[in-house]
Length: 102
Length: 254
Image (cartoon, rainbow over the protein chains, first blue to last red):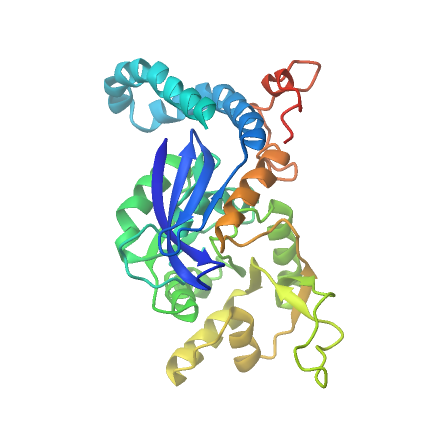
């Protein structure tokens, strides 16, 4: 899971406040206002099919994204590819665990 | 493309247009849809100075050539527009740019067809703004009901380049700060600004739930708002090929 912070308008505080964004893969899983604690999250019922749909897109677009990255920085691509490949199973395992444990 | 933000400008946290949205950052989605039009030849991205390193890395990763210009915005929307226009001024004066389109980067779902519609209307009439009729409004004071036709104004907004530049030069000289591009045009020029049909899906990321909605709208459109301007080699599920989403009982449509 990745976490980002940004300013958005909070309905409860009625002003722009800092929010914490939690992502499952590339999908937004939940948002929390750091001032009042208001928490919004996608329900399990909605998150799982949305994740499956997004995973499909991630897999289908991977070759194109790899080619794009290789064209942009061939040396860097070759240097980082083995590590990136090795990290993938663990990354997906973490995502699946997060989805199942919710 | 205005990405300088309108928040508290504390600089401590990520600008909302830099948040991830379905595999890209919010601001690169609309750059993508706009630049599918062959008539879009120059792109200027207006940012907060403290966002520059992240923006440049993101642009390098997510935005296809040709390169875009990145300029630092001011402390208001008007000022950010003025910075962008100064960047474009040489090309406008040389006659290389006929129309300037101004778009809020916090509206990642502006379709290619909407960019095309405002550009065409600006070429024909001088200025164009997308609007949505707000028919369900009521006034707090019963003695003053809202007027019959109230519209919500969206971006992208398009204007003939020379009058727009001239209007902003005059505004700068007089210290006028407009609330939006059209207000400056209306004050300093007699160029007519026409309304074109906006799009209900062209939401502005303001509240947290807007990000959830944007994600779902993109997925519903198969992440393609190009309206036929882009081929989709990654698209699956047609010609009888199975979708991974079909393995799910709801068919991937929660």
